Length: 219
Picture (cartoon, rainbow, N blue to C red):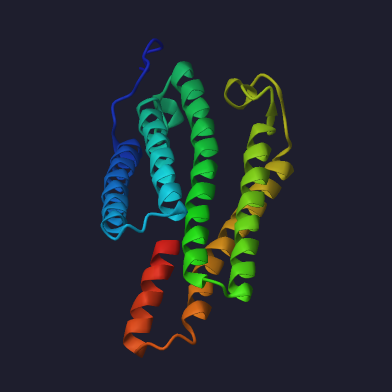
């Protein structure tokens, strides 16, 4: 029997996995960014890309907090195991999570673009390619963010069910557009470093190592 007055649910199964995975990934991300900033600070080489990645970490921390709270109110649990309050609360925090996620994704990819611009130096072709990638990132963010906000009017209709919402075809189109753009920018963040390193005078093994590091950081 579900307690109609309950405001949270014990973490088990998928909900527990969601909570634990989110927390662990945040800790790993914090350690990685801290090491990066420490190394850059030691070299007196802090730049815009470092500020953006730090901002991305802060936004990601907010996203993790939303995911963890969402797990306690039903996200990852069966509908049959939660009451009406938790169902509404879970949908609300899922909506907030999506909005914060697209903001964080845009900031982190902007940091990657800033890093690539630093490496590209004065090469006009590379810089133009990176700015095009940055532009696509910004446009994708705007389309996705605004699209999510406009799915239901008023916005609260997303979790209360009271309002006028877009058709399923519109939701699918928004999802496909966002996914296609994300895949494109992800691949570009991997390919661009490869072209930048192509004519660099460096031993093949070292060049491959640098490429892997840049590509891994981009992904």
